[in-house]
Length: 207
Image 1 (cartoon, rainbow, N blue to C red):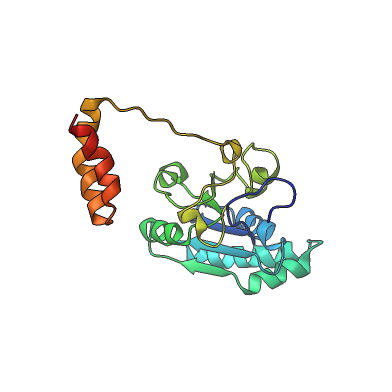
Image 2 (cartoon, rainbow, N blue to C red; image 1 turned 90 degrees about the horizontal axis):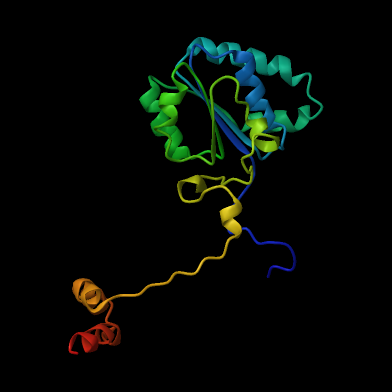
């Protein structure tokens, strides 16, 4: 039971980031973005998806260099053990993979990031272009960083002001309106074996 505070009806954590980057990306930027999530803890997951073999090699080197400079190096190292670099043939393959993965944070660090962003359907929050590190979303860009993880971005959105607004729905039908939707209601009620539901409509149509 909720004892205090406000309940959030959404699974959140451990932290995740997926980065899609092409040959135009700065490997130092990519490495920094991956490590910014890896330092959260051993259960964090970071994924690089790329079309560039040279970026794989350069980013791997950059990670090793930057890792030595981290205060939370041990956490990041443990996280990296369970993380992946995935080389794909093209952007379409990358987007298909990323939409299935549905990461908490998705960074698009590539030449046509704006175009690809339009194709993202499953992600907690998307960071577009080389100047949009995930950490700004945590602290300063204005988006809430309580976001769905573990693939739940396929079904949930991040927490927002709307999450704390209680809503009530109201409906008023005219006789003509009821008559128009009655067949659908009666058919669905019959399919569920709920005769009284159907009768509540039928009795009105006899008037």
